[in-house]
Length: 91
Image (cartoon, rainbow, N blue to C red; front, side, top):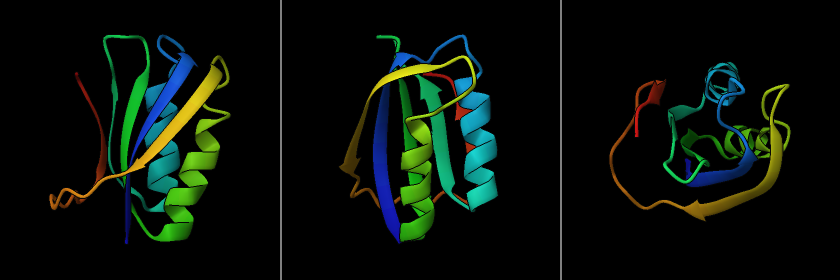
């Protein structure tokens, strides 16, 4: 299992990025969450199989149709909490 924290920067709020990320994560079988951050970026915690999480990371560069992604930062996350689904949360 792979678990990462993804920070997506650019025009990613107000363009349905979280909803599209939710749909993509569920399609890939990835669990975790997506949330807007106060600095205008979006944070995604993704856990799942290596190929599925890698596909979600690649998708982040495209995002929702109205998004303009300038940066995708990925770091390994070592927390032990297990997510059973993928959801949109409030920061």
